[in-house]
Length: 196
Image 1 (cartoon, rainbow, N blue to C red):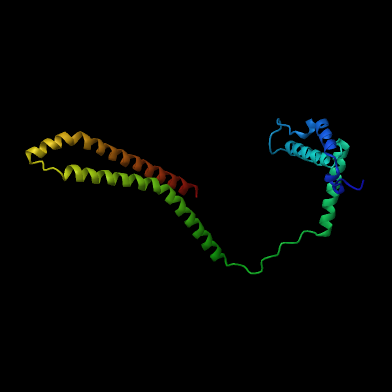
Image 2 (image 1 turned 180 degrees about the vertical axis):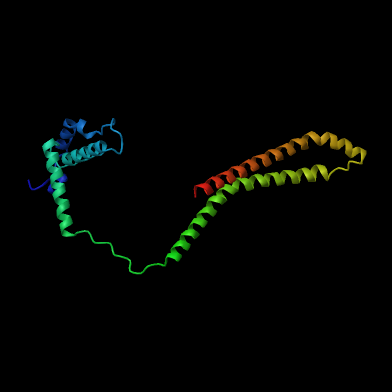
């Protein structure tokens, strides 16, 4: 046998592969107790992957065969690196003036800040639009509708007061909520100003 990589898996019988999968079933499962992104977990994943590779080639995934496979893989990688060594990264000959780089960086930061600020301002603008609509509705339907000097209108003013009072309270709630959002935004801006 020349090497594990030269074996054609299509020439291996499915019965042999199935028998090896049953025999080494415990070796084909990841150890769930290992913490992810640790050396032990990575080694366990490599062991499972290499075991599956050997079974596909019709070879028992014993410790000795796994070591041989790893050695063969390392030799192949070294050979490939000799054939085509890494190419050096070309150096940049022209240099951008520092002022242009600083100006571009400042402009990028300002654009980013504007995008973030527009995201923060959107709920504030929405709250203000609600307040304006409510106040416009109250003004049109209540204050401009009735004349307080007219006796019949005076009755309507008293009768409609609770309805429009609730709408005015809603507007006040929107104003308070919007004011709180503006204050929170100002506090964050001050805090960021101190950090810079």
